[in-house]
Image 1 (cartoon, one colour):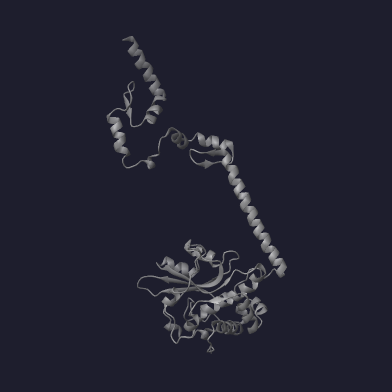
Image 2 (spheres, rainbow, N blue to C red; image 1 turned 135 degrees about the vertical axis):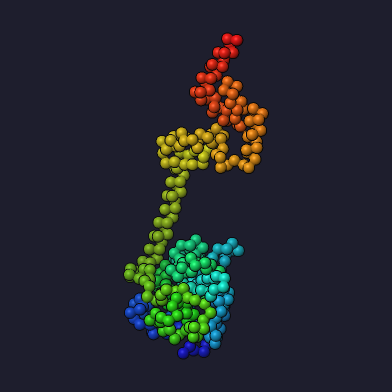
Length: 351
């Protein structure tokens, strides 16, 4: 039975600890019981991590009726400097999917990306990368993501604190998935304390898209057994390696510009490749000022026909007329023209 409390942090400490104690050991990653050893430890970790929850979340959890989908659509999504960039936070988030004349869908997930946090995960949804199975299936069926909001969040932790916070975030993700019943099936209990959902599941106003409880997933760095100092050193080393990679990449790009065709705005690794490019029709046409057909404007045909009608670019020996001077020059360089020109000039001199 959920306690009657007035503080969301107190409620969530109770909820997390209840999930940890009621979930069978075979369904949990053992690391949860190693890190979160007591209710006091859970409370201290939430406090130390500066964990925050969405406004009004306690009222939703203690309401006598299940939340409407509009509640999840009102969850905060943080922005930075008004540029539409998600702030760097670790978070448990909710994804709302909607389709005309159909029940909405809900997915609850988490993001603990080391450097970018939930910003990185939300960008993946926008770019359709690493989409959860049932979210992907819903999108194929015509559903659209109409909102991405945060249920709870914390500032990016130090390297030494990441492992413990990741453990907590996975339990929070599981708790929210069960309490709001964002699970795909309404009949399976997934081995979880299903009764912790405060409402009858068949009264919920949406369908779930979560395929499994995240409490059984692996946790990054869990098998390394590194000390806090070693974790900080590892993070520093990764950051330095990234800087060196970017520096090397930029240097490589700069070196490539040594063999550059400025006409076509292309760069090559070797002079020989640039020489080969310079012989291609595309390059030669650009040098001569011959625009590719796809670049012709709608008025090109009219303009070209006027040139032909006026015989503006005309070869008398061949009785050949073209629309542009560049095409006339190409014609004049042909062997056929040179032969006819010789005959034409010989005939003119004899008369």
